[in-house]
Image (cartoon, rainbow, N blue to C red; front, side):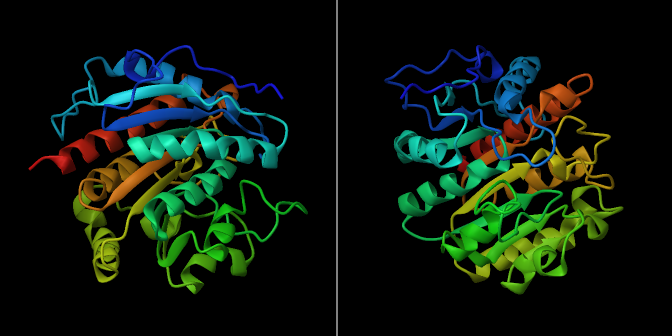
Length: 312
């Protein structure tokens, strides 16, 4: 069967696309251009291309806080060539493609809708040999037990990951949750022993000093459980639509860009992160590329923070 993807023409930050032999850089990036599980507005399949295009603005890419750049440290593998009409076929084709990449490099994945995170966690669980901690930015809890009558989708991956033992529930942390939903879904992560900092709890907390009590809870939780490997899943709709209109299911009352940057800048250099995804960027609904620029700079900040954390 032939596979099809909305292949991006530009590499992240203007890098040369990675060749077959590439893998000598510590970091890698790849797109997963899939939006077959969206429940509102489609378009996230175009997210990887838009994020890469927005990243061209980063010029030399030297981060003003970490004073480092991913240039020379990052390979862009382009978009994975995947089926685009069947969730199960997409995930089955995805697994043999992602396993070699995460074995060789610290990977960043550009989505795509949030259903891509479940197979990624399956691969990381196998590669790490243990369940992962997760830092999850989102407007939605993604803990539904079904996907509008279907067994799996972009709103079920957290529930599935916990049920499958892919993650450590007590080390699962959610930021920005605020959408409508049953109490059982909204509080599922907390009921399993994790932490939820919903959008209401984050109101008025902007810089690192104001966020410090919340971030200290995360640090203490990870330390108490032996600093497990941490995966970051960043749904762009964690942001208020004023900052990110280009997404499939916008929810008013969300996080600011400053809040997300502050949390990334504080936690990413310190915790044992092993990979990240940035999902649900839907360019057809974007205004002035605001959403794509935010996503590109979140990814860049993550990469620079990890590079800074690796320094002696």
